[in-house]
Amino acid sequence: MRLRYWSMAAALSAAAVLSPGAPQTASDADVRAREYVQFLVQQLDQWTRDLPQVYNLAMVRPPVDVSALSEPEKAAAGNLRENVQRLTALSLSPALSQSKDLPVNAAFREQLEKTVQAAALVNAALGEQRFPEAIETDWAQIRTTLNSLAAIYKCSGLAVLEVPGPARNKQPAAVPAGALVGYVVDQRCAATGKSMWTNVACVQKCVRDGDKVVFVTEQGKVFQFATPDKIDADSYGQKVAVTGKTDGDTITVAALQIL
Image (cartoon, rainbow, N blue to C red; front, side, top):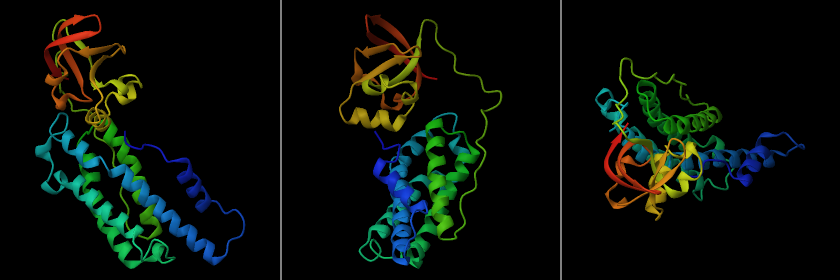
């Protein structure tokens, strides 16, 4: 599972940078400013790690209309991740990792500007199309972190765009008679609550790590799949309607429809 929250050490580090505390020498202030920049870059690196995968997956499913996105917008998440990796490498480079120059370094500022430009295309895409809620939530954190860095280096930041509403006049997919409605998740996520059932990246990672694929109903009842190898990875983290035969807590799938 991807790291979603600041570690205690990181949070304390940020608090130390931001709180005035005792009087500081110029050297102390330089160190704290550098550490704060590195802290923000670290958070940005963590939050964008899975973004290209979940963004690209979302583009091939409703309600996202990929034909309405420009080619740069389609490639935007991957480009952003590459720029964040370059920014991270710069912040950890021998020349800057222990230098008081980091908060004013021209090369770092230039790479930050490129990163913001790449992020602006993702920001635009999320402002034009309704992406899954998990992506929108993560993006709010990414945008806030980038804007904090942009403020330090006096760069232009990202606008907060209103998320489009649901498509008008679009009828929800009909649920077949007798079908069970729920989510295709890994066994661990099934037990952690509904907030994780639609976390596509987490489900994919847990399955890759060897966890079992299961079906959890809207009411929280967990069914084991009789033939889990036949469950398409495209359904991971998706709300689905399953028809088939149940035997206790096992379900043999006759048909599975993504809703």
